[in-house]
Length: 131
Image (cartoon, rainbow, N blue to C red; front, side):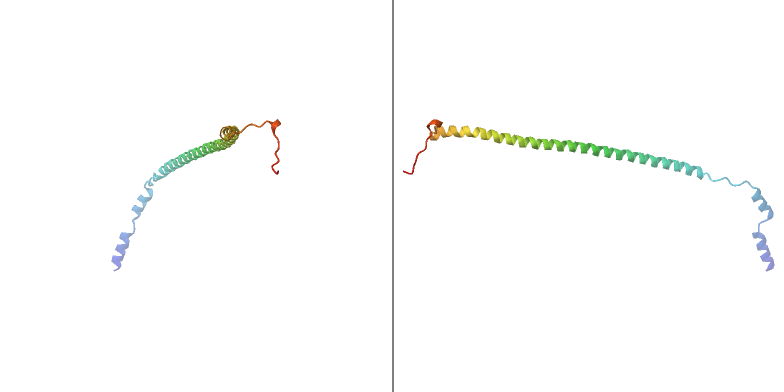
């Protein structure tokens, strides 16, 4: 049994010649993934900066559009107020015109239908109806 064990350990143990060739051999080249990772990071940061810039431009555009709409709404509100004032003024003028035209029209109708006569202030007198 000892012979078998010694043979198994001898076969499993490396020989000194093999060990020397491994240490004197050229070291393995470094993996080339590090420069690629840097290039990817640069592309990713450029892409992120580009998206931030595009988003900023879009948000600025939305702000400017909202300001333009706000200005238009203020102008529209002023125009609406002025229109309502003009309508009220037109209604007041129409009422004055109507009342000014109504008095002569009523007098002319009374003259024609009921025989209204213009009274002379000198001929006006009082009658006593109690007798």
